[in-house]
Image (tube, rainbow, N blue to C red; front, side):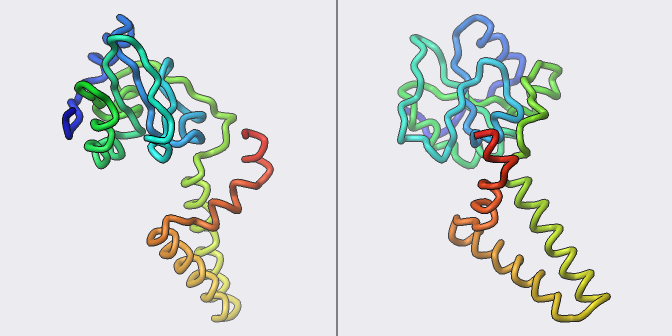
Length: 176
């Protein structure tokens, strides 16, 4: 077992996948995977790593990917420890794969990723609070403060109430 991931260029990963010598594991959350992923990749969210066994492909190298490579990089030791032999990472993630001109499976009808929905909603609420506070009454500045406090709590605790609320919205329930 190693404590790091060996970086592979998109062309090298594509070659290994084509030859059947690799298993590509996408560690992003299911909503991100549904929106855009590499064909043949297996969804194994980082949040559930260890709770479910990795799929097996006899003699195949495990290659991890995420959106840009940041998540795999910051969790390299944990990901490498999940496999018996050497573990690899797709350099640049799905974005690097697409930038190299390799095909991705995209579903524009899938809901936006939850964190993007949270960013949009929080941004709109803060902007609304500031504009109403400026042009109507200063009491609306409290809306911006409330959203800021909620985001701070989400960052510290790992619980995001806004994401939980957005998850039950009709456009997200239909995808489930």
